[in-house]
Length: 67
View (cartoon, rainbow, N blue to C red):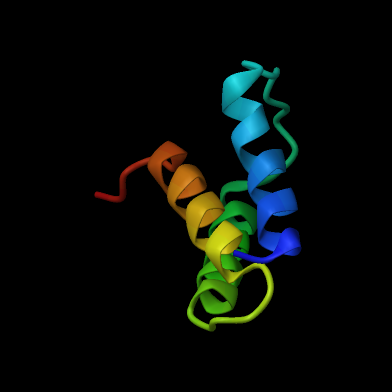
């Protein structure tokens, strides 16, 4: 794994590890768009793709279920 992926993963995982306070900064539609953009980045094999997959999964699990 690249240094960039390692650095990004440490930032993503640090939120869970530190039990950092979550801030309500996004609307539902913005969060959905961010997850889709992360999935697009994750589909490749370039810098940050592994971290993007990880973050997209983390955020996706916190999204409200669609009925």
